[in-house]
Image (cartoon, rainbow, N blue to C red; front, side):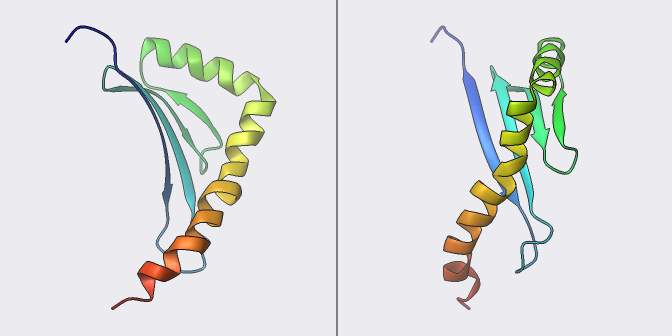
Length: 92
């Protein structure tokens, strides 16, 4: 099958029940290679390929994008963890 494969993934990583160590990761891939990643601990986009470096530079210049992805720790990660985590964590 000819064509291109693009992938965008958001991931929340944490290990404490109070979510104080919550980290939000956002990855952008092209043909199964990660080009750009946002890590809320770092607070900016990082490029891993030549194209990814250019994309990261453009994203990092746009404060609206940076503020939006920084907010995802609370609006996406903590919000969903508070909804779903008790159903899993409280089971033994």
